[in-house]
Image 1 (cartoon, rainbow, N blue to C red):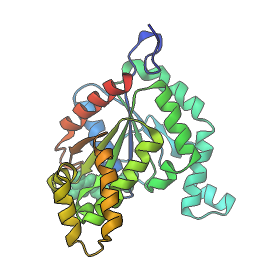
Image 2 (image 1 turned 120 degrees about the horizontal axis):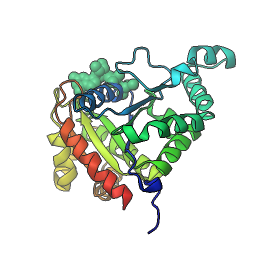
Image 3 (image 1 turned 45 degrees about the vertical axis):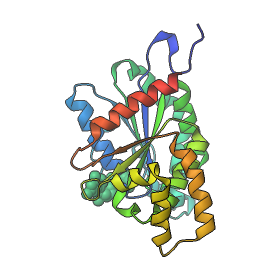
Image 4 (image 1 turned 90 degrees about the horizontal axis):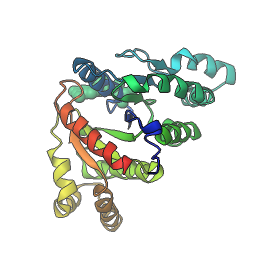
Length: 262
Ligand code: GDP
Ligand code: MG
């Protein structure tokens, strides 16, 4: 039998959950929630923080980029603004990522999942060489799943919804990894509207036609592209604050990890 990248020495590797999403979508709060959930089940994860600029981390990380680089010092030293400072810090950290992999490998047998939080601003991770290197390196060793976190209350306008979906779509095609859309903050707004728009094309078209920012023909064509995208992903609604939907999320991770191994 051929050895898949996800199973070295016949051992089953823990899945990586890579949390990606727009600033403020709730990545860090979601990390805190799923970390607490796994600890409560006595199946603790391995936790990695890749956000150099997070002030207060609400969970304990096994590996924290902030222990290696101080982004404010990096800003001063290289005369950069905040985003440049964060990106450069991530680049400096990535040069040592082989050491990170060694540390993870030592614990891979005894953890249920590997949870990874990414910088607040999405493009710092998704459109940087460092982000690609980290993603590809993890995915070559562990079954890796993208958890794309969405701020549900802020995506109820059809045009905003479509922009967010197109962004998610671009990440899917860039990474080619199993993808879970995590509609967060369902304690504020239910994600039912999103599920309806994703399953009933005409409902979305109708909603679009009432949107003031509607640009008819372009929007129509793009929503057709999304129809194809939707067939490649899993959708869950969660509240990182209340914990609602977390079981559904882990069920989706299990399914995605199986898909990855195929
Ligand atoms: P990040 O930038 O993606 O890491 O987002 P954070 O986790 O820092 O969260 C941004 C804001 O959204 C914070 O004020 C959180 O308290 C809030 N937030 C995150 N998840 C939820 C949720 O499920 N429900 C509600 N109501 N607020 C949330
Ligand atoms: Mg964060």
